Image (cartoon, rainbow, N blue to C red; front, side, top):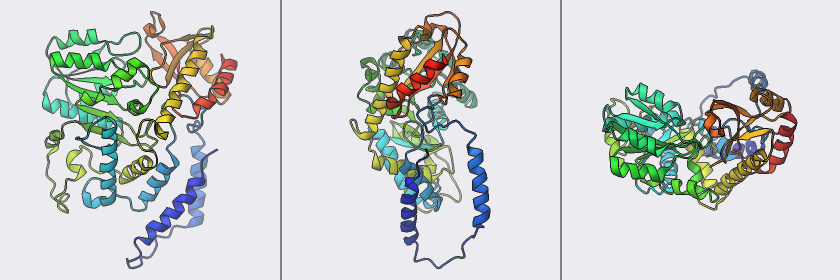
Length: 430
């Protein structure tokens, strides 16, 4: 079941890399006992079996998507060098690859000029964006929707910035009217708009939020950690497309290549429209930045040591699958969305199921009527179909009380061919 062909490709690339260093004098190998390594790795494999099959289309639960084989191979290849993308001399090639990869992501959103870098994930990327917002508007509030990721409130606490939660509409999107009432007080410095909430994949109404910014003047941050790549998809609903088409007007953007970008964990990315925010990072190091007058990535990052292997893997993946509308990468996103729409239509037609709103991206939320969600979750798992559970506002389902729901993230393009099988298992689990 696990992809293994890339191991041969990796071995060939490793031989090529080894040839690049043949001019060095030989060094005694740090010989590890192959037999002992084999024994340990056998144990590791056995331990790793205690996981759900995240790589398989019958895993339709949390936001877990296998990295592309080229990303796995490129990441592993880079670990033989083990570059550190903090100072330039710690990761010369991988620093260049990071800059190129980040520029491609910025270009996907329409930014030719930007400042940005990779991070360990969306949490750190969002922290940097909100840290910049706090430096530019000290003591002012951060506002995000009630369905935004919980880290925004937690990050605001870390940064000692006040946080305000904006109510959502019945489709899990920020309510612009509620936001305007809060903005009228004049104490909000940054609004976070979410392009794909983690619970339901809802997309905040960006055109309306931008109109409010024109009138109230606040910094706009886009949390597109989950849904950012869908800007390439050609089958979004008109309302959703209208929101994505305005992303370039934001002040900062966060996206997670380790979600839809086919990368191993952890690989996030933060982007700023105005490169001048780099002056906020200014610091001095007595040992780090003297190998080159060129900007070191550590000079525009709150993190210090960062794996160059992440940059290498991302660069290789985008070299194979460019970020272009209509391309292979975009077509896979469109397949995931078609799978979600197909699955939603089957659920909506079943009298045993209560559905929420149609998916804006590729996440479907629903609840069984006749038995607890936990029971269906367990029944499906026994048949190798793995779902996720969520507690959601009853308003999403036309109810008053909170709903214990089931959630299906159909983020693998293979899900489109597996909806029949998923439905067959679910039908016998309800």
